[in-house]
Image (cartoon, rainbow, N blue to C red; front, side):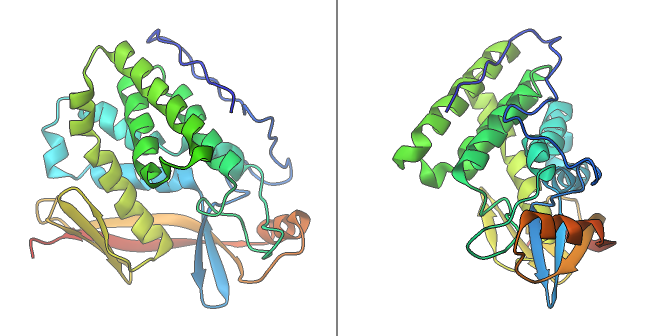
Length: 269
């Protein structure tokens, strides 16, 4: 996997072009053509973008009581909002699993895709090196279970180098990054639980996160007893295999947009 340069000047302007040469379908609005979070609902599939999920995560974590006292709160919230910006190219290029006919989502995407989105995400945040370092830490955390796999070693080496470069640019130590990072992961887990509708209990650090219907419960309470209303846009298509990318794009062009609404609440039980 080719390396990515991570410039250190704080006034750098992140590149907004694809490093993989992907081009959006001009007939489908950018950021709305390949929603890579896939939520089956009976005979339909609801599709959401990773960047929309990340922005929802930020809106949720703006209410986090513990985060309010962090000296780097703004950079942490920036990292939460932008942690999935590297998926924008994939949103612009809908694909179908040729074996199943299913929409390729962020879990089933090929390794080349999953390895490619994170260097892009970090590179786009170099103007805020603390946020960029947090996103690199996020990539290292969410894929940690693959660390011993040979095909993942170049990815971990690149992301560790990216984290080091961004820490050096920030002038702050790794220990501070590790202390700030849990807020990124918590926001990610809460938003993903709502977007996917999964009822599986998720754990990270002191927190557990679980979705029940339209409600996501966080234990222990991170929101001072508040119930936080949340919503995200999704597009609905029929839950069916697609014979080609062209057939999927036709379905997306004809898809209805819906708004999923719910709430986040904390508990001490």
